[in-house]
Image (tube, rainbow, N blue to C red):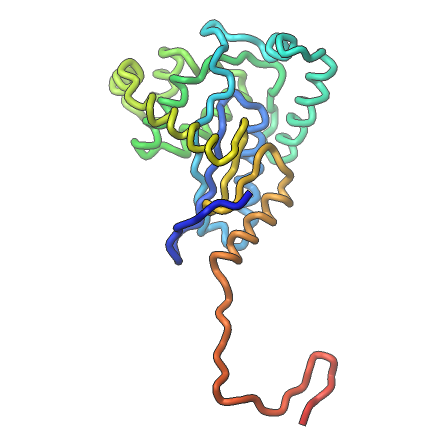
Length: 246
């Protein structure tokens, strides 16, 4: 998917990843993406930015197990296992051990995303997103009610009283909705959805080799090797085949 870019030359290359905290492919993919960037030769000039995309807004506040959610969607237990067990294995291979894509409870994440937006404004972007993925998929932690989110906010260094005020007032509701709308305008139908350097979109969980190829292509296009001007002609040369022209 080609997208326009207005990135200034010499600035950090941005990777935007739209996710939901309860999306099992998202938790695995964010780990895989971090590994791909770490292995990339220009990884220190790449910035990963998480964006919000709520995939199950209709889940009741009491929550629902992954098994029941799959059954409600018309899947059998075998079909669910065939889809999600490989995700658990992939996460383990990427270094996210003990990944629970099946044995967990999901809930509505509208307030969750509003907390993530607030945490980002407070300089806690990485701590909030990574911490939530680790807590939910690593420990089946439920992070969507007011009290659950306020407790988590304190754990990552946010003021709990201010966090409560932010969530009660729904200060970030519109911002979160706009982030999802922006992804949908670019063609996203679900999560994860990755945009590299505002030019290339990747929908769904892809392997690390694909992510690496996309990184290199975007980097090469934004950092072209300049062609040299040779106004003074050329002298005798030897070629790579061993032949010399004199």
